[in-house]
Amino acid sequence: MLLKLSQLSKTYPGTARGEGVPVLGPMDFQMEKGEFLSIVGSSGCGKTTLLRLIAGLEPASQGRICLGGSEVAGHDGRIGMVFQEYALFPWRTALRNIEMGLEMMKVPKDIRRSTAMGYVRAFGLNGFENRFPKELSGGMKQRVAIARTLIMNPTVVLMDEPFASLDSETRHDLQEFLLGVWTERRDTILFVTHNVDEAVHLSDRIMVLSKRPAQILDIFDINLARPRDRTSRRANKIRRKILDRLAGGL
Ligand SMILES: Nc1ncnc2c1ncn2[C@@H]1O[C@H](COP(=O)(O)OP(=O)(O)O)[C@@H](O)[C@H]1O
Ligand SMILES: [Mg+2]
Image (cartoon, rainbow, N blue to C red; front, side, top):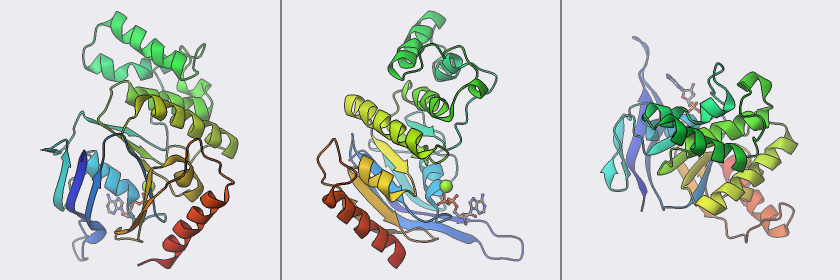
């Protein structure tokens, strides 16, 4: 397996008087290379915390995270993250946002420019490469954010509700776009959403989390052929099962 979480848990420190706040786990979980796995769970259950632990942005209270056989401790260049709120640098153009990681790796300018321009073209951003984030639509900003992460070829891509701020039409466009990119590259994607429809449309497997502290209630295999039909009876049945599991709690 590629990614392995063992007895992972997180408790945020309490105030001087209060107890700590248990937010996550303990949790055991494994993920294979090339998998598209979604995590669904109610708001506030600990989904972002889980991604932040894997990304090394937040220390775990207990347990281990292993990637490709070696332990993840703190920031790890093998892990890429896409946030809900774009998190682009407003003073950099689309192109310069996309090439940012390569710049930090001291890749020569002509090479990073041509690599970033490849992403501009492949990601439907042609003609917008010299625009600043405030001049781009929400869908375009999120394409820039995804390109900026994928250009680094991370071993695992974490996505935290990346389409939650988009209107439903743009959201569907971006879902199809992401599926196209994934079909070509076969990145390993851990995708957080609280939209069950989105999870069923995109994923190989779906992990359903309990309310806080998040624990794994179930993991569903989504054996629907691709390209998928959102309106098929089988897709509906799977959605129903997952919604029931979410509503049922522990
Ligand atoms: N830095 C922090 N300190 C204390 N509590 C936190 C902190 N970050 C998040 N929490 C709490 O942890 C819980 C889970 O948060 P989060 O992981 O953001 O949930 P989700 O992404 O599923 O909505 C929430 O109740 C939140 O208030
Ligand atoms: Mg969150």
